[in-house]
Image (cartoon, rainbow, N blue to C red; front, side):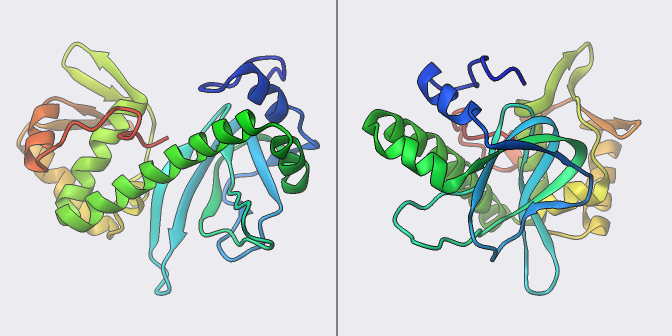
Amino acid sequence: MDEKRQLKGMSKDLSAVLSAVDHRIPIKKNTFLFQQGEEVSELYIIYSGRVQIGKISPDGRELTLRICAKHDIVGELAFEEEQPKYILNAKVMEDGEVGVIKKQTLEEKLLVDPNLTMEFLKIMNLTYRKDQTKFRDLVLHGKKGALYSTLIRLTNSYGKKVPDGILINISLTNQELANFCGTSRESVNRLLNDLRRNNIIKIEKGKITIFDLEFLKEEINCENCPIVLCTID
């Protein structure tokens, strides 16, 4: 990422603060930038690669909340806490590179400019709201609804219009889809097979094409939330 480029969804001033990274590090697939329970010390800006944000339950089940990619901020800040702990995991999905921003450095820069502080907090709050809507879908709609909701969010984040529908232009395994739903791979396999038999979707080379998006929305009584809240990134 060119540090002079304005980061998406941010003012030039905040982009400049966040682009002034302490250093860069390579990231490798299946490693962690941070894990829940560790002390918060850094934030990260992704230059390349993808990072999966989620939690692992006490019984070992994995729940994925979102996928972060180029220009996204990864991390947590809690200004009111002296030693905040990460409540989520950041697992690397694809090799790449990130810029590291020290928590103390960022706090010092933000706290001298109330406008930048408010802007940053609004951005972080939006991320939390996205996570809350994801939890809502999991609680209210069960396994089937969780999968349908995930497919809808994937179309909003990675959807590409094609002649026969909407192609989700990212390859995900059934296990990765199951992690978004907080369920087993076997359950997701059955649900995807049902959708294929009913000609709602097709799967080719690991990518899903949605033929009937409205069917998925109707099945979960979609409230047509703002797109900014209904994404997977």
